[in-house]
Length: 156
Image: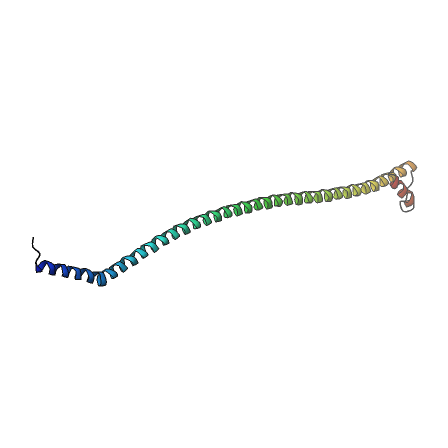
């Protein structure tokens, strides 16, 4: 194999081409590859942050749900207590009203009994006067003997 000028020229041209590529072509390509690698790394980091944020949001949501359930249970318990208290108040008011009605009824009965006694006394007094008239055979004047009739009605 003989080395001739063509082979030497090709070798020189190839070396110049490689140097030219290393000086002017290769740096922008490596720069673009580096930028692309940085973008990919940033994207992966952002995805990791988003995944972490999602987990945190899920935890916060579950905590808020627990708090909401606890608050709902507390509100329900308060409503039950208030309902029980309202029932007790209604029972107490009903008992007070029943007692008031009973006392009023007893008072009315006592008044009617007293009225009936007074009527009975006046009727007994009238009967006594009538009986005395028959026994004595004489007229008894109620106005003249009112003191005696009052004493008689008081004894009855």
